Length: 355
View 1 (spheres, rainbow, N blue to C red):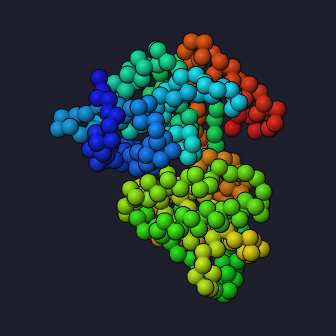
View 2 (cartoon, rainbow, N blue to C red; view 1 turned 120 degrees about the vertical axis):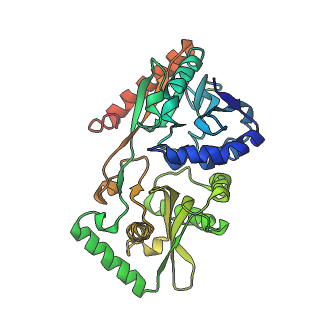
View 3 (cartoon, rainbow, N blue to C red; view 1 turned 180 degrees about the vertical axis):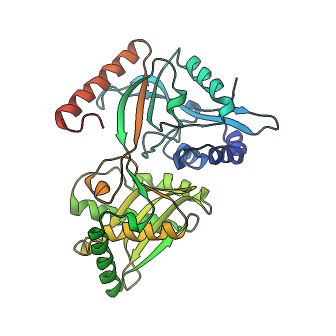
């Protein structure tokens, strides 16, 4: 049986061994690290400490061999209805937009983890969102049903892979024009981002959204999460950004994401509408790919969303899946909710299906 950790002190002591296990587990993402999970718990999950538990299996010498961070929560049946169905979910998922959720598990512990989750699922429904097929799906309890599939496009972290040859030529030409106008680009590696950079990103993101339209949950309410992530950053892991500055040194564009091992996860973008005709947004992607390639990063992960520009840039889809383990009347209601969502999705996007 695992040891169940809940107190901040116990979790802080686990971090080095947990992080080492994540690094040694193939296919893990930044969203499975203690940096993200505990940063989320301290910010967006604040006040829910009594509902969170981290299950740990240890080997000889005390090193972690499996770590499962879970949260006991209520899954809403409708935004306007109070309460909801009590479920287990992945700690760190939900608000904040974690993708590629999963667990760090040594191969010797796979059966132990599967058996423990199966026993947990006998008494309560589970909703496991945006699971990675390698680090999440293998541990699903019996009876789990896939209720959503989300495209998460990826491409090589190489400017030579950015779209067609004609597209790359056009982007390089636009980058030269911006340089001639005095715009400079700076890569801020993990551990080097000052808090003001995130505030600039929020401002530029808002300006961009006002220009292109649409809605976004990325606002000042997210600042505590990203401050907690930045506080845990170190060389090679954590928040990082490509910043464009005008001739006076003021930020006019920022592309922000997370680095973990050989993968950069693109999280958010903002730019000054004054540079829209200069295609600053596209140039930011090009300059980010250039910086990543120079730092031996292999993969640029666009995370969730099958927006057309990602495929135009040369990305190919991989998929995360959301699973429901339904128990009792509440689980049946969650199943009915997911079925209704799929029907609405097919009506709105008949060619896309559930992807």
